[in-house]
Amino acid sequence: MKTIEKIKKQIKENKIIIYMKGTPSEPSCGYSAQAVEALNHCTKKFFYVNVLKDSKIRRKLPIYANWPTFPQLWVNGKLIGGCSIILDMLNNGKLFKLIKNIS
Image 1 (cartoon, rainbow, N blue to C red):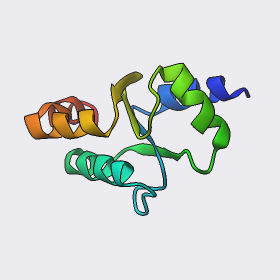
Image 2 (cartoon, one colour):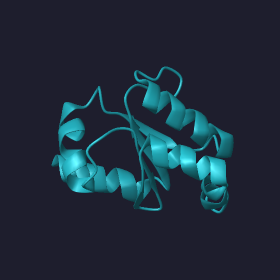
Image 3 (cartoon, rainbow, N blue to C red):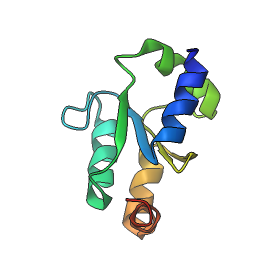
Image 4 (cartoon, helix red, strand yellow):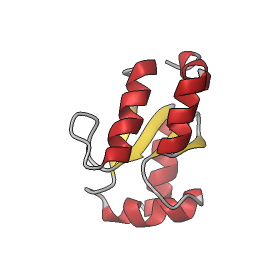
């Protein structure tokens, strides 16, 4: 399976998915750590991909998403954004509203 097809399949099969550096229990960058912490305030049910373990996804996802950085949060097949957007949405209540209808 080609990398873009793999990414599309992951996004389609997982209602909430975060592409991050590291894992939720051991993030490898501060932005991924903050994003997961914010996400954990809303749900514990999400899928993650450690882009440090898959160099093809790390290279191809920014092109596919037209979003250059990690983490990337996708909900219901739509790119929500990176760490700053996730934190803003947590602080204004929009992240909880978005996630509560899914999980």
